[in-house]
Amino acid sequence: MTEGKRRTAGRPASGKASGGHSQSLVRGLNLLERLSAHPGGLALSDIAEQSDLAPSTTHRLLQALQSQGFITQDESLGVWRIDVKTFRIGNSFLEARDFVGTSRPYLRRLTRETGETANLGVRDGATAVFLAQSESAQMMRMITRLGSRAPLHASGVGKALLAWLPEDELDWVLAERGLDGVTVNTMTNPTEVRRAMAEIRYSGYACDREEHAIGLHCVAACIHNELGTPLAAISVSGPVARIPDSRLASLGELVRDTAHAITAQLGGRIPSVDDYRS
Image 1 (tube, rainbow, N blue to C red):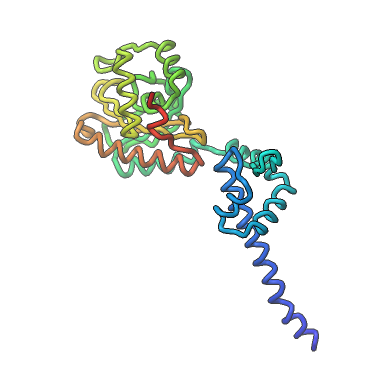
Image 2: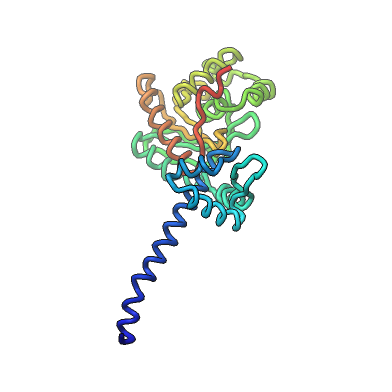
């Protein structure tokens, strides 16, 4: 056999090895994904069954992941769990996550589709702080100065954030801030506020019907982090003349779906309404 033929004959073996390594990598990542969904750990037989792999193949992949510090085995319980290296990698993603930058294209799209100003805000104590905005081109439009604040109970963004807070944090906000009437339409009764929060969780969006400014309507929805708690909220706001009551539901659904898309891109989790039922 000539040298050229020997090199040609060797190529398929090299390609096969490369494909084998790729397959092992995909299978290993699949195992990590399944283990990450079960913080308490999984037994070898369960992992093999869920992954549709032979127990021997599963065990070999688990040992390889363990040797690199990605998973660990609790021999006393007979289960495998995510280990510290996987946590560090996931945490680096969270630290690098730029939710404002990620949200900007979505805000611009909301403005294109609705013709109105879109905002993004976060909670700071008992208030909402506005961090980003896509401004409407309309002559009469809503403009919020970046860095300005609004009470959580009297603004669309604030109500969207408030609705998904744990009960003890909601109690603190209501006690700390109180329920001042910003306009004649602002909710100032705690029972009324709690009922409104339940409605927001059910529909997935909040409505501000001239509660923060007379003549202005707003719809907003929450962006959630990986724990399902509020990270930020987005809104669409405009004059009542262009956003009458009859338009709030359709705009609310659009903003809600957009917030869900941002949540998914950021690796967040949308909580269930059942989580908040007493």
